Length: 171
Image (cartoon, rainbow, N blue to C red):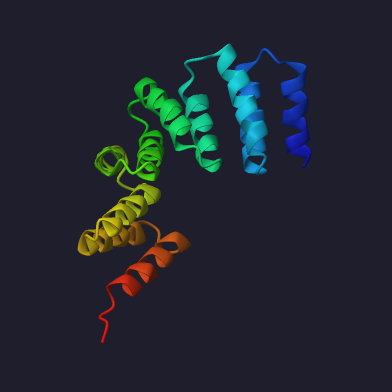
């Protein structure tokens, strides 16, 4: 709570500071106060409209609000400004995946993994996309790659268990 209060005070004392507004947005997002986080990121972008980190954070906040169209808009610009960011590419691909743009999402996950082949969330999301397409062997391969990177990640265990359930032979 102390750090959050300090970030809030910092943002209030210097409303013209994009980093302070963005940091406040990140604290709000972490606290689950998504609409307020979006407002803070938007304030930061009015000051510094081409900050890829803030654009990415705003896109992520829109994802948390189940607003993939808005997320795609901001994440696309973030990726254009920071093309070597695997996380930004993965987040854009995830937003595209939510919109049913499966080919674009798959390409985005693969591009993210070319930049960082240890990005567990991209492997999991790629596996989810393959499972959605009923490409179960490809899904398993992606989940196993994620497991090899971080076997303790509960998302990996859940994904593999769900895939096992999907692929069980019915009598």
